[in-house]
Length: 322
Image 1 (cartoon, rainbow, N blue to C red):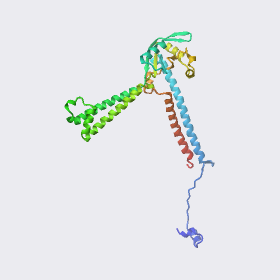
Image 2 (cartoon, rainbow, N blue to C red):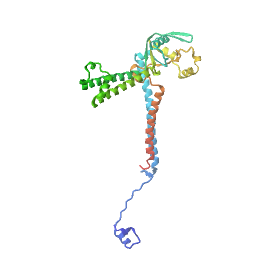
Image 3 (cartoon, one colour):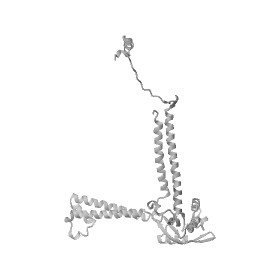
Image 4 (cartoon, rainbow, N blue to C red):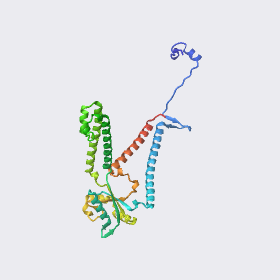
């Protein structure tokens, strides 16, 4: 194309424009979207509408989850009520005092066998009392046993590789200090093998320290007790008498003198009595999780859900052009 075409002051512009066919194409962007009916809608409005629909879907989904959870609990309760299982005869007792295990079991058996509720004395036939302790110490012992096995395997591998350098009189009683002395005077390979043994030994000492601290901590006390009655009628009657509202437990913490004759008082602790879950529904590893920890876990889950929803809404709201 002739460059003089874009300059109208030069001669020949009219002849060029009249003799050539010119085609122009342009892309236009608009803040509005034309509908088939002839109406126009702002694209930002469409973004907000889509974000609102997304929010409504999230809210409906959460409501459905709550409703489903309630219906599921009701169905499980009805099913368990119709079955003749051990949880139908058992109550779960928590908020127990720190006492010797055997003594605590004996005192609980006596406390629930003869109940002095105001002026009425009620007798129940208790057939079993089981105590549930923290699962943390058991997990530490399992890890400690695995480290002991690993340490024995490392000793065997060390002796297999460097057994010719071990004194025959100490071969059957090879100690950690013996290996340490050999590694200092031996080769780099021997030193590398000893470092693996030393690492396992350090892990063992750390776990032993944690186990010792766990045995003397508050979590080492009994977390819950499961009291089993002879009949369902006795269990239901005991549950009606011992079940108290959270407000009653709250008032006891501030003014215990008003609750001296309350049957829930047990060696200075106010017992919390609930329906016992089925044994196969109990996750024993989480039995020592506190209410605060449960609340924090749920809070983190909710924050993650709300965060994903907010991010999707922001992206939709910021998209001016579709």
